[in-house]
Amino acid sequence: MAELKIDGLSCGYGGEDIVKNVSLTVKGGETAAIAGPNGCGKTTLLRAVCGLIPITAGKAFIDGKSVAEMSPKERARSIAMLSQTGAGGDYFGYTVLNTVLMGRYSRQKGTVFSETSREDISAAEKYISEVGLSGCEDRLITELSGGQLQRVFLARAFAQEPEILVLDEPANHLDIKSQNELAELLKRFTDSGKSIIGVFHDISFAAAVSDKILLMKDGEAAACGNTGDIIGSEKLSEVFGTDIRAYMKRILKIWE
Image (tube, rainbow, N blue to C red; front, top):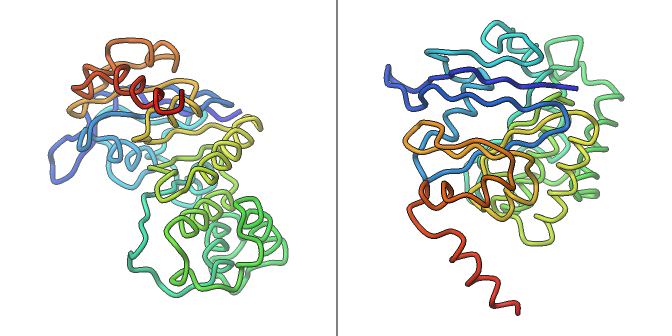
């Protein structure tokens, strides 16, 4: 059971804190969604949790150990991040299989990809299959659609076999069917006792996959609690500056 604890964390860029004094605990088997307006510090918080940018105050812990004190390889064995991707981006012409194999680096005994084992290849093929891309192993990722590319990077994150999965807009470029399949994959991940923390712009999707929600505004925690409590509170509308409940009801009327 993997636990992520964020305790009074502040971080940012160029000596300026974007995120200020945020706390959140994600226990093994839980998914925590981070939601809030654009530019409120959601992705910056994720980057600090993964050790990609310095923490200026507070700490982040994985099973009681400070993320800042872990080596890069140790972090990679504990936590994997799926960053935002987009169709039309600049990517090297690796195959799907080789891209997913990059997620096996922290599991390899050596330091070079020439030491990739049959076990690594089997694991990569397994996760490629899980995200629905069987048969695409030899395709170049530069030839894929945005949705397919997102699946490849998700498979690469799974291939790290982390205890904690960090997601930044994981449903980006995915169609409805793929979003539903993603939700099932995430549930399978947490059912194994592992934990997920992710940024979601789609409040409905966030509510469907999360156990708790952290609302952020202007770099600070505006509210944090069980998903049902947050969705049912006025804080949601306050943070986004619009009546979320009324908006969702208007959308639902289309299907009545």
